[in-house]
Length: 140
Image 1: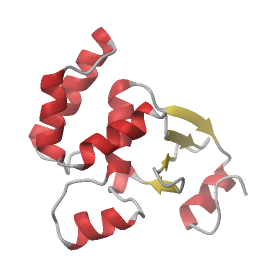
Image 2 (image 1 turned 45 degrees about the horizontal axis):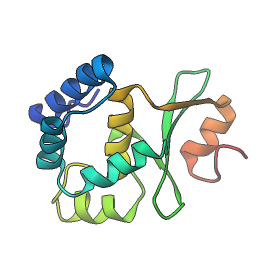
Image 3 (image 1 turned 90 degrees about the horizontal axis):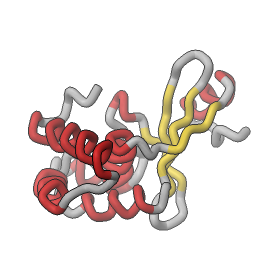
Image 4 (image 1 turned 180 degrees about the vertical axis):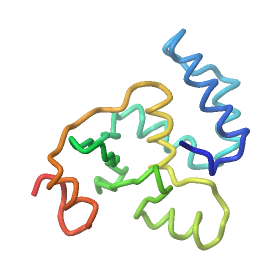
């Protein structure tokens, strides 16, 4: 699923998943590894995880999108399958300057998935289509 990430990043997520399942905590060594691999957005992403800001929207047809409530209160719809977030940091840091692997929103999605703390919400196929087209939010 995350094959575009370097193997070291994949391993960090696997280690977080295994450790969190066993202890419901992330030890300091993994937090340091997270910061080393993902840089300054790691702490911000962990903050979003703590605030339960990540929701997985799923439709009957099997499509998934993730909505992340940013620190500013803005809702970002992230697509992990194609590694995309509409936030300015993703456009500038990841796409334009190639200085980071992920923005804090996508990293928060990966962390929530690894930790099993992603909130779940079902939407209709029509709502998902509207969301994917970007013409309105999923509640339209």
